[in-house]
Image 1 (cartoon, one colour):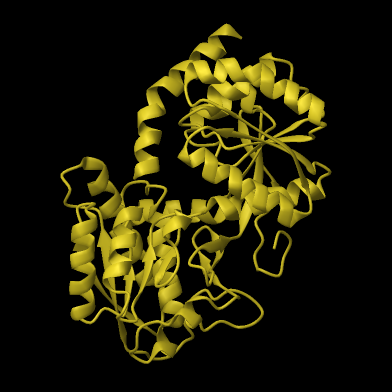
Image 2: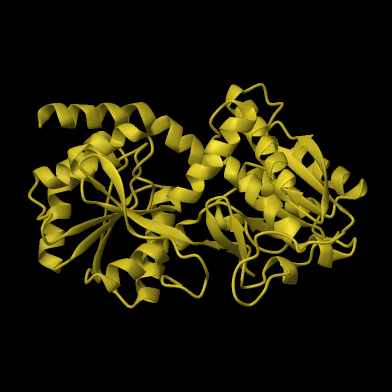
Length: 391
């Protein structure tokens, strides 16, 4: 037991700075999502792809190349439409993203795919706000969404709604929210509260901890006591595997949380990195993830095409091109409109169905998974249409 806590402490201590940096940092039938354009001829759609390459940081180069590769893989899958993809390297700079977005529109871009970082995406959106050109950003930051900016990344609200719906249907409707006392934790807490309310459940309490090793140690017993006194049937945690989750989950168990009656639910992915799956505290926890079967197919195809596994964000570029391709014939050479982008049937991407919402955020069809014996097990499959369960 002691060794497990030591491993958890080590994981937490090594990753705090990474998490802090990250925080700063359709023409579709009514019956279901579009998987691509109808057969036939269509003119080329000019797409500006803004990637973070050029900053001098190796991670930005990896992300940039992965996003471009995935976009080109998606282009190869389209039929009946041509994509004129023009790549612009922002170097991760908001100022450069702003300038390149303007340049791309001046050069005829009908839609902008990217940028990667939220501050870049916000700057790019503002720069071309009066042009009628929409920005499909590789971000999950709902704060920048709206106007001509859409975020493609999986949002906290989307995840919270999916998990809250499943929890209520499974008899775990009394939720205690447990959140990090930082920006990401506060945003996550609000998303959970909205999700539980929408699902018809009840938030029986909210508790938090200072985002530090000592803060988690000091708060653990109080969280367990609150869970017991409030009658909570589930603890909905904002903690992630790169931050507080390894230590927090273990200490909650050590302080006497009754796992037989109190379900752990995670707002973040609990299967990344894979080493997390071995931690005792996360066993039996619920979390949401993209359709694993579809995502595995994408990984296999990417590996065959480029000789390496894609970064987790690569699928967003594929999804962006898939959506653009699905709408291309209807655009008739004009910028892709908000009405077209937000058609409710949505699109089929490499990780499942998704649709863009009028407020600039998105909704994705997610699976609910648990961890059993160190393995990920899907307990509620991802829906294949927006008329299915969970929506």
